[in-house]
Length: 110
Length: 116
Image (cartoon, rainbow over the protein chains, first blue to last red):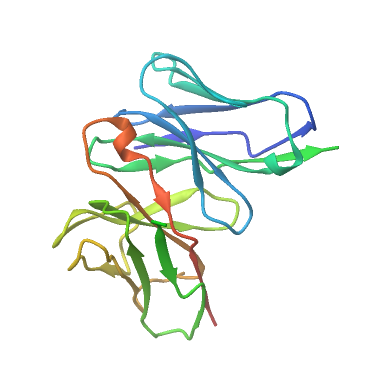
């Protein structure tokens, strides 16, 4: 079976840094993806990792440790518009099948 | 601009009725997907297709059907056999390829189905 765990909710302050963790146990692994989803809207792609290490994209960074089945998304210089749900997804097969976690709802406060 | 168009955005259905959700993309992507999202939960895969005239069941295919007669289109039918169809339905597409980057999903705006 597939199991992906993320914290349900997090709260952070505008201008701060927040780390959203994701642990996974899946039957296959071909990459780990992070998506952002604002309430009532479609998810949008943020970042992905295939190899261990840190990938940086502006204010967003994502880290992967395959041996630990662990990833995190790091958001720097938080803005109010970063209040959203963040979805962790594992590409289980290289034929496009992804399994999603339940998402972490981040609330950014002034 | 390229993208994915889903329609209708909101749909109400009586119990026992079938309903079809439309998904059209002009991104020239080979693969298309249907996900279901319930409140406070992540996305669950219903069906996916990597090539025209071929599709595979996802994790929760029971009570749903799809077709892929054209590369651009991947409609989803929610049948009366689906016990709890009220949900937010998301269509997505991606390039097909061996690299992880080819599997980045582009989503449509979603269709919210409510069964009365």
